[in-house]
Length: 384
Ligand code: SOE
Image (cartoon, rainbow, N blue to C red; front, side, top):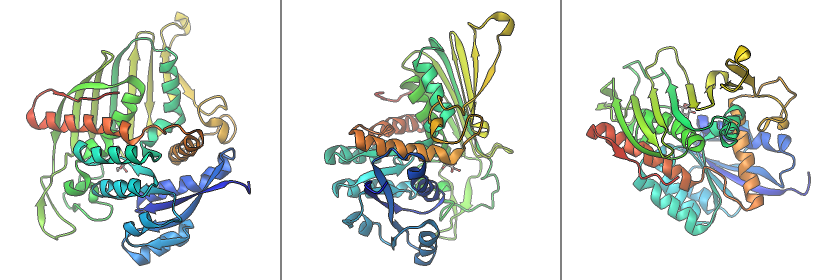
């Protein structure tokens, strides 16, 4: 469509998430033709000029910058997309808001609640559209779970259970810090599995089941020291390698969450199960197009778990893709988030999760870490 308005993107950081976000911008126009804006890949920013240029050439960015401040200062950029390690989110986001840019930020919003608060204040003061990439909400089967819960199909909810299991940090030889491994460096990441993986579970959980009131947690760091890529020295590991917590939701249901990077055999097994008075649902990322559903109100002779293949045109987002029966994947959750962000700009509504909502997830993460440290129950202070 020739008369579409340009929305010029400045991407900061070009790692794994830089690719998922860029792919989303590239797919958007073809699959969401009704949007009135089209993304333009204006500039990408990182420190290594040579590799950055190769990324820009491969993915189609018009230009490069090696200083993020230059991107924020550019008049030909409308939206800043933050894909840096977590320790840079706050400074970039605050500067971007002050420059009047829209902001799309990779999760978690920040390392701590205190670091996130001025980010929330800055976007609210500037009145700029903002969102945080908690992408799993927009897997069609997960969005369908939300629809079923909101329709009251489950009735009163008793239990919420979620896991996020990986196994990529088991080797003690793996260094901490640097590209690709900053997630192991507490200064860069802020925490381990709590901020990286449980944050996803917490975001989905509160979206589906409401606020988390209080938590009791334990964490473990299995490998206590690793070589730091930056210094070359063996240094203490500050992140949590594994975290388990239980909690009360505001609606009276009980929650149980576990995440680890030491579950041999599991690469990215995000699962959740919700048990209500009438029905239960289950979902897992390794079979992401299916939602398992059990409804006690079914005729007793045929009652049982059904496996809903979420690929039909009347199921969330699926009218945008192929034909019924044909699945989409992980990358589409990012396309959906960008589509919803663009739509929200056109409608003048917030795109959930906003910085403000992501701050609530941050509060739960912090309460979890404080609980593990103090071996006590902690109120989250969440206002959902
Ligand atoms: C970590 O391995 C990671 O890439 C997270 O950072 C992402 O948020 C998660 O979706 C997949 O795993």
